Image 1: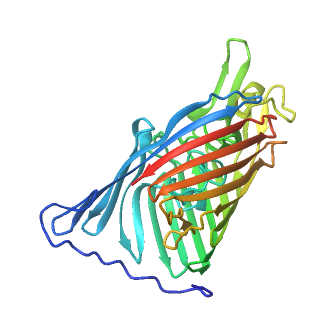
Image 2 (image 1 turned 180 degrees about the horizontal axis):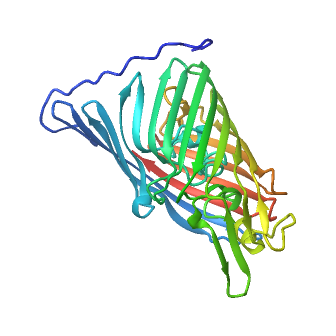
Image 3 (image 1 turned 60 degrees about the vertical axis):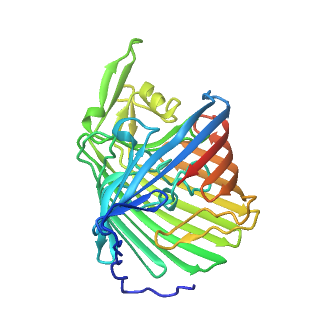
Length: 427
């Protein structure tokens, strides 16, 4: 399908088809339906079990294993409303809640209320069951949107022809964060001018505004440049609520302080490009963010936050002043299905899905990604990562992943490397 011009009318609301019986019945292997089809519930889940082996440099992370994700989700509908309740048992307390919302069709789109992902970054909106590498890129909540994958609010998303559009307003809070008065908004539009069985071209743009306020967590850009559970590099910070500031003296007599204006804004814009041709896949994103600053850190606190002493002159009395910060990040990623499969495009969401194996031998995929992030206003604050990988799809629900990560923190000089393995199942 080739899509050349804009379409000015949206699709009508989807029709619901009630079930025949009014007694609970099994509709599929993990789904029930009742009350003449006005109620349904379906059980889903995922298991991601990881192993991390590090080749240490300046930093010395611990090689280990972990359950990256252990999720159960119940989805269904209540008359004309849909719902989803998802719990990740690899996280404790309310911080383990993931997608928790109700939704309905409004004006040809999906209106969502609850805890969900704002519409920004193709990599972030791609399911963890479908991502090409084991961890998402720096343009996602693994980087410039650090710790802000899901937020509580209201959103609307629609698709028509070869376009998608989504917009959301939200509180700067996920279920594991403190109650606060921070607010944000995000929007994304995509266009697939080419989309057929052999090739797809995807273009997208997104924008995000976040305004921290009373009791908000700081807004950060932070990256694990040598893989998960490895060393991290704080790249940018906008202060949150006043409760996070401090001014104390430690046991060594050092003055430790972090103070400034309460709250601040982070504005981020992103560009997306992705394409497939047969078994070959290419994806890239660029994000530029402006993080409010106007705060002071003692030199000891700067080193604690950023990993090394300040790379610029600090005032003997007032410490190190951090003003507004311009942050840019980008990546380029590619893969080749050496067994000939093709990554399908989800035109309703504007993301790509994993390929499905064509034979009993499974599907094999070679992957690579280079990514970088830089704070233009703190000298030398830059981190890079180069990753190589192999994905083996044993069937449509089971995948094994192997990643080699070459980290490079140009700020601290650390070059830790990681070998990572994942066994993954989903249903």
